[in-house]
Amino acid sequence: MPEVDRAAAGRAAIAARRARAAVKDAVHRRERRALDVAETAWGDASTPEGTLRVRELLQSIPGMGPTRVARAMDELGIADAKRVGGLGARQREKLRAWLESREGGPHVRSRLVVLAGPTAVGKGTVSSYIRENYPEVLLSVSATTRPPRPGEVDGRHYYFVDDETFDRMIEQGEFLEYATVHNASRYGTPRPPIDAALATGRSVLLEIDLQGARAVKKAMPEALLVFLLPPTWEELVRRLTGRGTESAAEQARRLETAKVELAAQDEFDVKIVNHDVGRAAQEVVELLAVPGTPSARTRS
Image 1: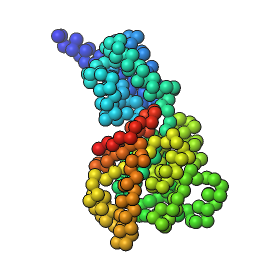
Image 2: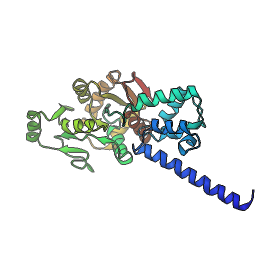
Image 3: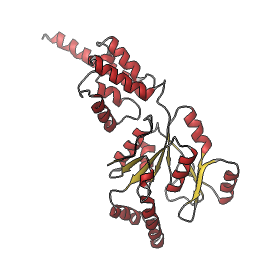
Image 4: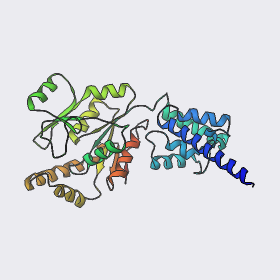
């Protein structure tokens, strides 16, 4: 190939990659629906939409991480290297139905996901990881009467209030749920911010204790309950004793509570084993955009 032709081909390849990247970015920003991209590809396979790999299209959908994309590709029977414009008639219909069931409208349907689990399992750590790495996820902020731990910021990690303020919030019906935890401090979930977010199509993640999760399920049956499990009981003990935020007596009391909490795991829709914080966080984020209520399952 002459030098000038190679240069032109190189420029064309770069332009094509940029065009495909722009398509993926538009889907990720919810400026375009994945289904609209697919329909464009099937109208003309030579377009950026048509030359986009199906795997890349699915990965650009908010909430679709590698694990869920791999599962979807397997369910659809589409090879990893297949391009959207190159799908056969049957594969197109299967992908169209899958995208319609998922998107259904101009946006992914909003959902309240409730993350609970035994003490020291890492709920707060997973939530913090999501807060830092998935800014599109809205985390509900609970109110509590306990004092802040080192590094916790009022209004970001919790609303730290006194008992008088907490009582007033109860009287005014501001809580989705509230409870006394570990026979000591009280925790409550302000409902107005959650209702407002769901009404605008945003999904919400709520990190909460077992009592609160049960109360939320009664108040909002459509919420998806996720139980975070430790890899082993020994690892849970190590995490609790290693963080050094409680006295020996408090640690013993929390471990007894953890045994009771672990026994309730089958009440939850999804169980995720917290081997690795980043992986567990990704699994939780993927659930925030999934329509329908899945049967109980464990992810590890």
